[in-house]
Image (cartoon, rainbow, N blue to C red; front, top):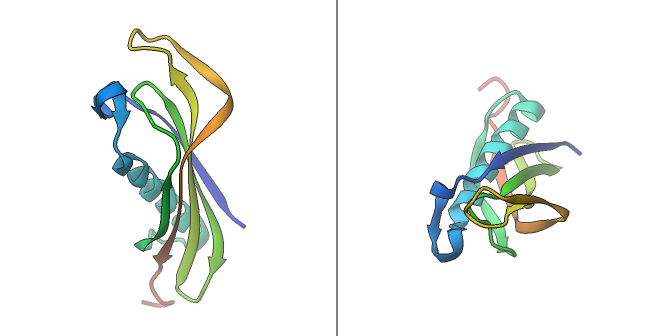
Length: 123
């Protein structure tokens, strides 16, 4: 099983809703980036993402957070790749003054499963 992980600071400018909440599309973009990285490492090609079979929004992501996006290959077909994604909040901003804390236990904010495809050999 192959796994790739990216970390990122969530800028306050990424927040669009009350309470400095970030929209769900933010997590899906990160999943696209980490999934592409996984495809390159596994297949030597960026591949194309076909879709999600499930997405769960479990905890809020806020401006000022530090998050970790992870992609794990769970099944490899001839051209299709089933990938599990997880977005965890590692650090949470205390307020908008710059104060923040490392969370003792990361919060699992978003989970998803998706399918990517790679070109046929020689294509």
